[in-house]
Length: 142
Image (cartoon, rainbow, N blue to C red):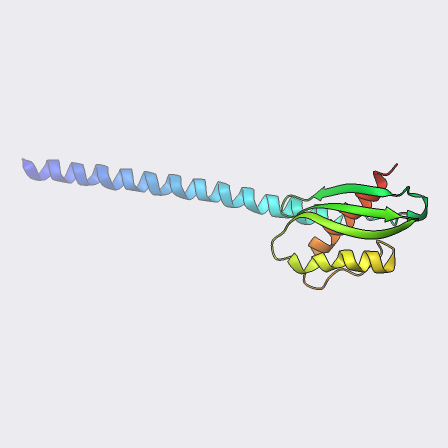
């Protein structure tokens, strides 16, 4: 009589293991779908980001904070304006994936005195987020 009990126990263990594996698979699929959806929304937000050039000559002297967040990339900048010119852009925070090289774009903005500068190759999304943060800082001047 012991044999049938062992078989029943084995079947229960197999069923339990199968159920746990199925649950793990479902949870994994939900997490993967959620992540892919987040990536898709992030890419769409970056792709549709519009950056307008701002007339800096009309902005009063001062320091202006701007930030822009597209979920995977975030930038917060301090833009200094003096005598109608951008004198300095300080990156206060830049959360990025591989876009650290994009930080050089703030030097291009100061040199060119415009937001219409080329993105840093290989860091296009971070370049867009940093440029948008600078724009929002300048627009916050009123």
